[in-house]
Image 1 (spheres, rainbow, N blue to C red):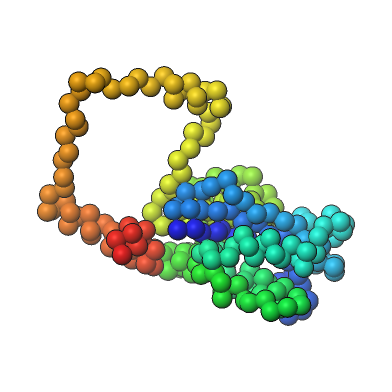
Image 2 (cartoon, rainbow, N blue to C red; image 1 turned 60 degrees about the vertical axis):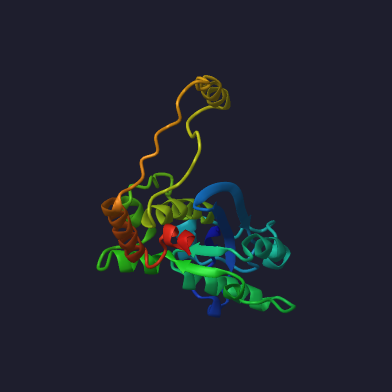
Length: 238
């Protein structure tokens, strides 16, 4: 299962008023594990950026002057996300801007929801935590996700943070890594393992009894309900 956590920054709030995308950030999840596969691109919008938008993301018109236009990066971007499930916070905003950009191009470019499935984590959060703040900062606090580096919005940083939030919202993060270890330390840790003795008896297999199986199924149903049908174990069963 390939998922892409995506975020954008823009010149303003409304594509109908001529506002454009200026930054795209994506991180990849495969079977709920973060990979090293990233997509990050600044884009020249060929217009001024609203002052209010600059206050949010800190990206200026001058900084983008030598960056490629959307038409120059669209092929790489679409190839990166094509066929994946997109995880987006407030998806109508980002998808609306992406579709607006695609519509401006020559050729027959499909809307993004024609070649990607879209999951809106804002909708999920509102269902799971009704009546509470559900912006990204609030969710970070609720799920103990470290967002100390988020002084300004940034597409790639926000995508990375949202990936951790999404995994926490849908059953906990699954990241197999040796974070915090240098490569030499990690190798030493692996090499220090001793092989099992040849005559060691096999491990005893203890299977769940009927009551434990029922408790397990009840837990899966609770996760499925809390995540609006996104329980991974149910998907694997089908």
